[in-house]
Amino acid sequence: MTASLTQLTGRPEWTALTEHFQKMRDVHLRQLFAADPTRGERLTAEAVGLYFDYSKHRITDDTIRLLLQLAEACGLRQRIDAMFRGDRINLTEDRAVLHVARRAPKGR
Image (cartoon, rainbow, N blue to C red; front, side, top):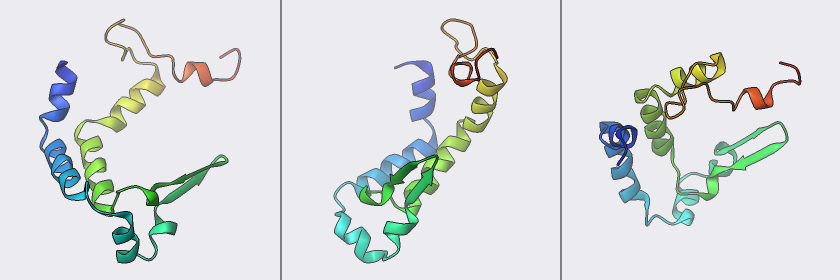
């Protein structure tokens, strides 16, 4: 396992998410919809012409909370900010990633 993957899977937030998965893996969507009549509206997102419907997956408010806790524990916001700043975050090639640059207006 790589060092970063080991760091991720060794976190208590990862363990909590794994335990949650074990509880949710056999839950049927019918149960989730029956328990939450607003599920079909609440677990959707729409932006820039894309529509995401998370309600048809074994996801709950607890799932989202646990994912957000893991993201926070891993410093995801700081990593995103570093990417947009152009920091050298590609460790294998010791350079900035080009994800953002490829989407910039021509000439920037």
